[in-house]
Image (cartoon, rainbow, N blue to C red; front, side, top):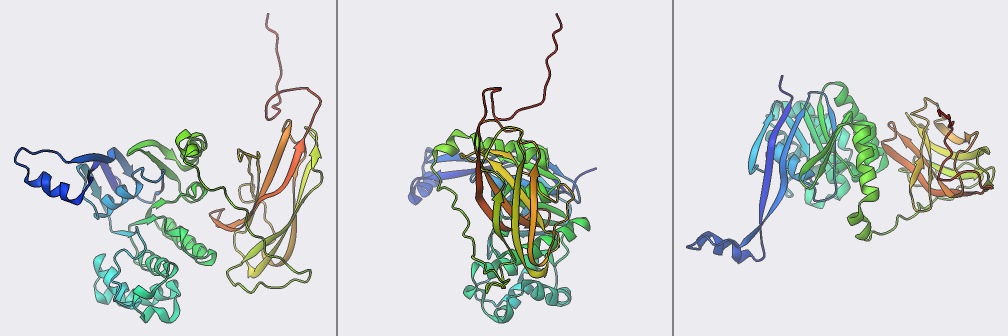
Length: 406
């Protein structure tokens, strides 16, 4: 049985010219002289997506992710191979794609509906839910050329996920918009997934792929490098990104610590309504430990909503060079934490710390939607050092035994 998306040996090549005139020279040259260099964006992609799958697509910039999605949606034509689609597609590929900047938001809702095959009568039934979801107020009747990127994202999402698509394609759109709107989008996408909608989801935040998708595809240099369970593919991809020498030599800006809003001793709601919760204090029982000693991390946080559904707390141990050691969270371990408005305190305890000598730091984060939405994150919240008399080597102590056989 064919999947809802069947891709067979898909190839996409681009001709790259040094100057615009070179294209004309090549077209009219009597001896067919070549003036271009060939770039292969997709090199033999074969992929089958089943109905109801949520598939994360991973890869560095330039790997071919967006090209693949544009071919699936019909925006681009392939150089070779085939794509078979067995359903109606709704896609968010670029902010404002498919919008007429001179039309109002309301007019663009009808325009996008028409492009997806819905007549005006059908869109009349849906427009109230689209406008309510977008939640951009009076701007719905203003030309979209005056919209901010956040408004574009809201309107694009509202149209795409309220038209009952068989296939929803989202390309980095969750990177725009505030936490509250991201939460609403994820909730709606989860509802669509439960109802059998197939979702293709591109995100540079690989933890979103791991937590939202059941399958993942890693595309590297136009080819599928790995395909399968989302957690396994994400682990392979993250390991590659950590150890990719090209990536390490490109020289990226170091990640800045999050700015922590100061909270008065008396509980006060922040003036910014988009601040849903904050970690206000992180302390540990010791800053100098020995292997197998107990580590206790006391985490205080404040919630500024009546309640936050699916609130979870995560703690992650890193080396100073940001090698990831261990990162559990309360969702994965079925622990409920307080999610009502107010000030709360939770202890995270490792009874026998197995780490050997060195300095380590601890990140702490508040999330919801199974960890997909980051509400507040503290990088390098606390650090600690482990020293021992010499008894073993390595990074962690693993329980073991020796058996002499001869």
